[in-house]
Length: 202
Image (cartoon, rainbow, N blue to C red; front, side, top):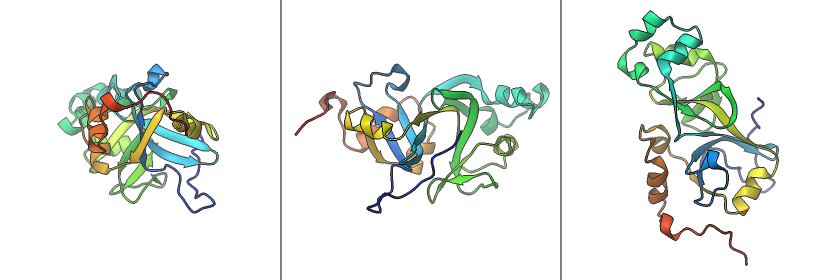
């Protein structure tokens, strides 16, 4: 996967990197219903983001065993923070591929800075570090991602498919997956009951 490089527009405005996309109630694609997506890269070439509020049934210890990082006996002895690390559904594209969003206190050569405080790493090094308690202070892991071609995300926003707002590390990394959608809307003063499902036209 080629992640679109973050660029600035001709007017100097950055695109939607380090922002949340929040699905509108009228979202037609069930895969994204009530989803919160963290945008990792957005440029004229397209966009790539990770759903952060959908969990997977796959457990982190089982994933480590599947990847050959640990054997089953080692996985059983994982410390609680690693044993309870939630694997999330990052999106419908390439669900066999894993990504870790994390605080910038951990970096390897392959880590991609998204903002001043958030990085993206997609190698097994970080999984191994998390498993032994030497990973980043804050992290979330997903399998799969959401991707858009050139202009596609802008069109979906214009058609009232998504709300956008600046991302905060607190919302990004907190462990409350179930209520993240409602809490994020409330934090920006949005009442679901008052949201129109149709785009407005001047």
